[in-house]
Image (tube, rainbow, N blue to C red; front, side):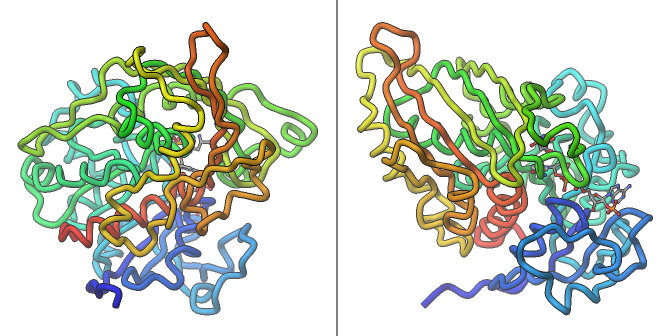
Length: 389
Ligand SMILES: NC(=O)C1=CN([C@@H]2O[C@H](COP(=O)(O)OP(=O)(O)OC[C@H]3O[C@@H](n4cnc5c(N)ncnc54)[C@H](OP(=O)(O)O)[C@@H]3O)[C@@H](O)[C@H]2O)C=CC1
Ligand SMILES: N[C@@H](CC(=O)OP(=O)(O)O)C(=O)O
């Protein structure tokens, strides 16, 4: 019989957006996370959800949801929630410029950071409401776990230390990584568990239009076209994986980033609705025992993460689904494998003989499920199972 966990009431901030809508769909039949409240901007607050949202999902919204009245994203309006999920834009979620620039942390030391109540996510944790965020602002903060649930849920064990540092009892902040990063770090985790550190990566992405939110990229720009640039994206691809793949120290008080992992990225936008493709070439550190393509595919197939072992209800059966067919994965056909919680990999092959890279593959991940709302939900499930909520 499945383990019963206590019910937790959840709020969704930014509930009308691309990520917010996905949160609502994924929470609809959740065994212990109950949708209690939805929030959006002042433009929407006070309206019924169905009157404020521009619903872009293939599944219709439920009658109950359609009638929910949107709240202002103010902590006092979410006091009836045990958890909030944030799909807020980064300019309102937190301090801009904190995401990858560690120097910024010097200007915003520990306690000061908490005083920034004008940034919405801070207001919530200060009001002792745990926040699971999709925004980029605090991903690289040394006291914030940056968690991809099928890679490093053990990083949630920093929560007690974060609370201590900020003088909180129940509140905390946990971030998801960038959606394109999520799709590549899961295969990296599987490979490193079996073959040791990856040293160098070159990745090229083709990212879906829903990644830019709604209304996002104008149709005149994206139809019959490819845009060879996404502002700020390559920097995230090059800098977030090291923290996710790094380790939590013995005292569960600091993260040691994976040293010596260099990632070069080129990010493009393509006319696909959902599902980011990443084309990866990588080189292992250990030059004496480089695995074959077959061994790599097998390691990905066998990979089991802690979230799966803990029995988190949204954890996919396979963290990675590996295709043998040479023309898969494809966004339209494969983005919903295991409800969108699985990363699909194909075209696993060896690099050129005598060439620099050892292995190449293509990876597909659903950017608003695995890349955003789904990972936040799975992180929250693990946090509940571990007793942090
Ligand atoms: N889309 C994706 O694939 C991914 C997105 N992310 C991140 O997730 C977050 C949300 O992205 P996305 O859903 O695409 O964005 P959208 O632009 O589609 O949605 C933004 C949401 O934030 C609300 N909002 C805007 N301003 C305010 C405000 N001042 N106060 C309260 N609420 C406000 C909007 O409400 P209203 O409707 O009232 O304007 C809307 O609900 C971003 O930080 C993004 O970077 C992360 C990974 C993947
Ligand atoms: N920039 C991503 C989505 C996103 O919002 O990413 P981030 O949360 O890292 O800013 C995309 O365009 O597909």
